[in-house]
Image (cartoon, rainbow, N blue to C red; front, side, top):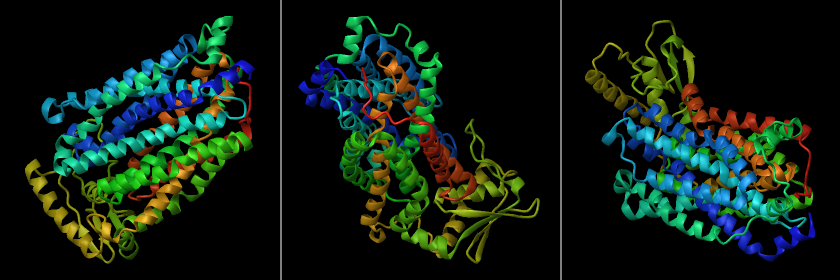
Length: 548
């Protein structure tokens, strides 16, 4: 790095890091509100479908914002390498804030029908495009200001912003829920955190406007060395395209699944599967995030001394090796009654395999009235793990709970009203039998080992800080300055947008299909393990590389 760049980094360190981080925190707040409120959004925007399909739809809408992030990376990455880092992330911030505010005003399904989920998904797509351009700009901007030997430490502050944004969203949600009460929050209060984003947008724009352009980019402008075709230079040349592929498969794919397992899947698992009260879930996750967030900076600082690659890959390896025992321990601590009942009275669905359907309906109107489907829907809704056993062809499905059994029924020939009444009556019988076997309807806070839950959640967050703290510096150092914004943004957002963003949807669908509440963990374990192999063999350590 030149002396000029180093000095630029030394003059206004606090403003550079603080302004970049504050604006990015608010963008992550906007983006992650949806994930934190997915269960409420299900009832308002996907109420026209069955419960299992509705929840998967809600998660798909959550994932839609991630799906377009790579396209945002291409569009705004190109603009960042042409216009400059600062101007581009000001545009992305404006798009993010306005689309989030609009979500708080959208009419629901009861008011405008199918137009409601369509409008919601459109807003999620705008958010995803905006975030696709924001992160690369902020990380590149800070890295290009950082003095030699401190790039990991400087960019680690940007890495805290995703967790702090999630933490901020949880705090706002907790405050609104407790002030309004559950009934009012469920009815309309969930909109308030989205509307608050307008205030955060104004503050973050004001902060960002105080920044100057990156010294590296400004020098390229002065010398006439900026790229005239960033997309062609970034992806049309094998020497750079190879680095993009390695950055994705050897760094960001594993980092992404560890991030989303530790901070989002854990949230869904507690509330949806273990039936922990929503407010309590948010409080426990928020506390774990508060305890874990300083480690982003610690691992970023450590990466300046021992390298980015060893820390990131170690975090992926530890996650892959320990996810199953951690989540099983989380079940025992958060809902000990459920864990005890699962051990003493295991549940088995005995059904003709031909009678069982993969319960996801893209149209949202299928009833799933086969006896096997009725049984599995009820158990998935109750958060009860079960195994499958084949029965004779043509036989009705049965649920065995320990030594007891509850026979299902075939509702395909019934009228809608008769089917609904029969399913309700049958559901009460199943609930009573599950209760006899010790399966709780909800987690009992008095029996929960809250310190252990927080400790396990903290361990998951610690893995997140290992893989995420050093990754910005690692990506910045991999690519040349002329196409850095474009080049680093794409693998980051493909990894986090696709591998990570689709994790909750994929994992929940895997659980619904198999009946095993832990089966969805195979997705992050396989991806993280693959990243350890690719990164270990092919990714070059670039600590201290010249970013000019």
